[in-house]
Length: 125
Image (cartoon, rainbow, N blue to C red):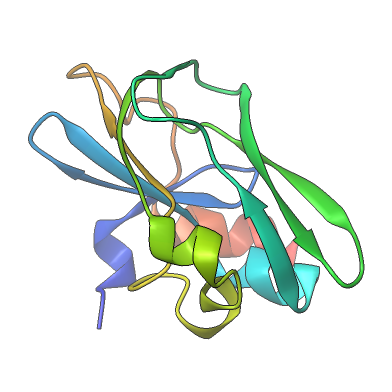
């Protein structure tokens, strides 16, 4: 199980885990629960440049369509094809199996992101 206190979070409900120069990005359990049953996910191609705050994809549920916002800037190095093939993974395992993309980032990638306590406070507000 992922230690949620080691992750960083955006106010748009994405999480980030950084290992060296690579940031793994996913959506939080809060976002997955709010969306309901996720039935479709669109993600960028490997090699796509993403900018912090810009839309990089979308998740469609039985209730609505939600845009996915890049919490970091960089170049997409990997896409989780398992989530594209089985979008329900986002509901079942948002922090483990259902990461969305991996992005090669700069050293200051986490500047401005929330820690777990701040994110929980944000979702309760």
